[in-house]
Image (cartoon, one colour):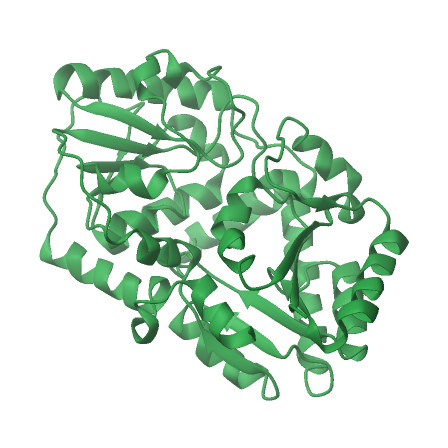
Length: 400
């Protein structure tokens, strides 16, 4: 009998995630299912994602009892051959309950504790009065997020308290620091270092042929006019006006195309709707895809972003990054501070495209930037020991 793996995710399970977790590769060796528990977590959150449809088979559940019955049916069928993979540690009390219940039922539980971004505190490099101001603004502008983060901290506290007798069989991490932290916190679990999701894609991508292009810039889109933001996970909407931001970005692209002779390609965010309603697509030649970001960056001379986890591909393919912000972005103080700190870390250019009318485009990478890219790759993206094996290959090797 084949073993069965069930991936459990309590935020919207996108086709992007299906490909990111390399499900098709795993299906060659296991029976695999993907369970989306968004409707169980909060039906209002699902409303924000109503425009997104799945091409791949994702099992959605809107009733706790029905979902739990399904899990225990699978347990009765597969017994020791059932493996549950949580995409993250519990962030709600219900997730904590099902996590605890499955482990107590002796189900093999794995947790992906992945962190694909550089661990930089948004308030780092600020003066004391700036830190106080930052925290006050954040408290009043995003109270639901603050409350949620406090709740997650409390759940993490509970997890640590019960870790001696309720623990997952495996914890998969991608960063060097998380490996050390989890080793300390989870003495009874097996902590294994994998690649980041992007790092694994990089390994699968390595031998692709390069398309010869002159002056191509890839823009890592954060959203479109109507797409859900990270705020949707807290059942709130973004504070920034996306129309204003995209109008500024479109003007900036027009300058790049006219004054610098760049071809712009837009790597759509996984949550973007499948249409052209954004101002940046007035020039249809800019449109690319949600699913080929690595290829776009590989064939680019420049990567443009406000902030995206996909900057990992810029580091992996050694491409210069231009960070851009607008006046409207200042409504999201955490994003602004983090973007400033990351651009400072890499010594990459950062410009406010609403204020800076004259600017230069630097396509050269300094020794400092290349060194920081290497550190980013080593500590977060690609685990050198398994540099020739993707995450799905590592899972197959471990669980088969």
